[in-house]
Length: 395
Image (cartoon, rainbow, N blue to C red; front, side, top):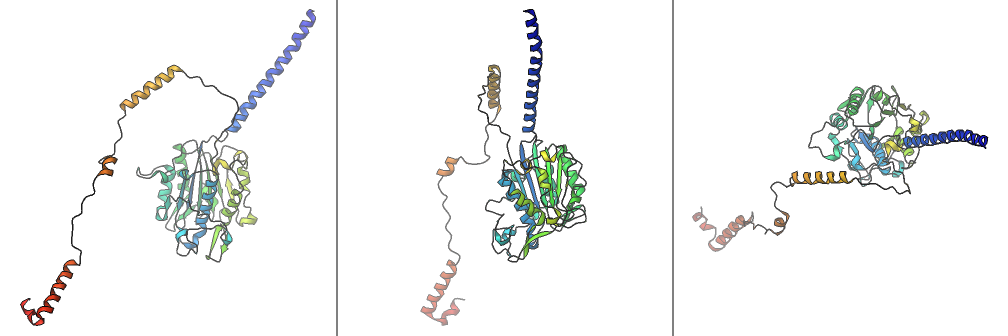
């Protein structure tokens, strides 16, 4: 009997160890699952989309920017989180055969302008100074909310730029330029001021890769349409309007994004392969050494969409209220209400008085030609009665 008990105890010990090991593995699996679920670490998304070119022959640059704008809105980023900067208004250009439209495909298949475009900076507002102020938050207090990048340390930001550039610079409206050093320093200011969690920089311009060579801030991933010494080429000429509709790189990026849905699991490695040299003619480039995560674990929607991390559960979770905390918070709320002064509008009549006040009577003035007409009538009556021979008695 005692031998049987000793055998049971000896058998129970490995079973308990096995159970603990399985419990530890299950807990580790739950932790890994939770870490994978919240792997991006961001809670909100922003986009800054910039077209730096003016004039009708740069139609494609406006179409580039509006194409990306259309895609990020479709994937969930609202206009309140998009700063759109267009240096020229192609939709209202006199040369546009179809006003209020901007097309990115031949035969006018896809209108990327739409009827709900909200342009935040337009025409001569698109300057290097305003762009850097938007990024760093150094803008005047009077600037409206729609022109601000109100991001924080939990924001994933997409910055897309297109225009004419060269080795280490991008031109703004053929009058000024931003250098890769200035752009790198602006991103460093953003990091120091905790204005982003992760940042994706995309540029479609000649020698675009030179614009991210000087980046040194963490958590930045960069893509460019061409390497140093290469041109970024246009695509799809349209004889009806006499210009090219888009640039090659952005055209194929747009085709790629059209297949993306908010719940897609497509990652950034797939975006790197979008436009090979056989299609783009130029050689697209990317830089990931500053980025902490592996690009294959970074979803496209982490930057191009606004997907909230939500997990649906059927279990009921009961929350216990702490009476002491509730009473203290209630007392603090009452104290704040007592200290808070009511808000008033300065020098304005109450609405009731504005509605019921009587209209002010206008002072009567004779019409402008009334006096002249009256004198003409008097002279006509005088001539008819006395004739021209009595004119000397008047003057």
